[in-house]
Image (cartoon, rainbow over all chains, first blue to last red):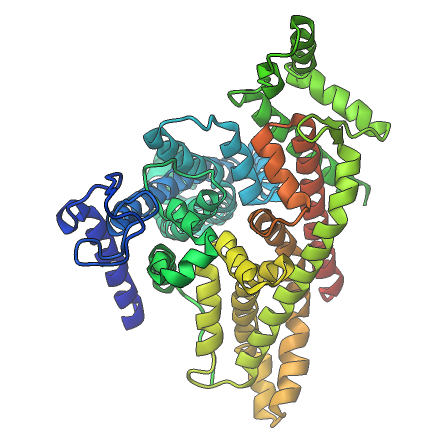
Length: 269
Length: 282
């Protein structure tokens, strides 16, 4: 791991810690309204000012970061798990099941990810409670984001199934379950981990897109996507540039995650 | 060729069935705002309910839809009160134009930057393109649309900005990997100029995969066109898809799903064909 990658991970870690310690870093709650300070500029009391409803933007940003940064990995874990089961069994069993799974993956990949997400999210009632909307949004991300990782895991499993050590293990009479558990799964771990980490920034961005379209986390619960809706008021941003704080934090965290994951070739001089 | 077209059609129709099933299973399906109108008589309300009852059996709806499709009937959008064919005819050219601009722009910028990075090799040469692509990758498409809206620029260029970082990263890695291959080392040892090495020995072998990349970008561009058209208020298919999803408009959503699946599958298949056509015979 390079120095830049370590710094990027430290930044993500610090942001996550700050969001977890939101209760200690700010006295206000994310939904508390200060009617005496509506659309107030930054001050010692409100470091990022207040929104149109008089809510502390700094508190909302911290709690929103908590929602986005904790639930995106949870959704990534779910999608990786589904992908591991679907792609892993397809690669391991082969035959008709593999052909069936490959067709399913092709079908899912033929529809743009955001279109699918939008269609499914829009079908759910708009009057769901804020907590339910958070769970639903990230559950959907997890349930619909399995196709790309499944394709990679299937290919990885297929390569492993035909590798010499596995053929030898099978020839030595190792049972199917033991073969899968002791020999296949540990060797698939790097692919699974890579797919998990690649999915996290994708899910953070998808939630942000959904939030901006009004289909993300419901009010008053904050998330990065929900907070970005303030950006639609262009004239207000010119007067209150601190409204850009959620966008800046989102870009910083996603950039750091991408830097930490970067494994590209260097240019020969 | 027949198998290819058959596979294309089956996948697209399955996509439509998937879309229809999702709408049918969604809570609130069959609820019509018109029923809230107190001026309506009970017979009128019954007639509205009967309209929805016809769609409640998803298998029957889909068979009816396919039958209509064979006769050139795409159905009727209840939320917009117009035939789906008219809506698609009106909005498709705009979206196709935006996608063409977006994909062409994104691929051109990404590819040009990747080529420049490989051409002028050296420490720190790729710093600015890498930073640019990193920032663009970290921006949700909807925020890019907002930026373009503030600047008064069209949504089509916002699509290019979504496509470019993906193309740049892939193209750069591909060109760098080709540059490190033994035949390039041999060309360097023979004293060939950088321009000749890049054009004849790096670009030429990588060309099929770069062409395939343009095909794959269509899917990405269409996904981005939804939030971009919604935010920029562009009356295209992306915005129509958003409206169809929000209004639970089954005929509209099924048609858009089939159309989108067909478009992306055709683009991916064209990319595959390009890849195979350029591949040297063994």
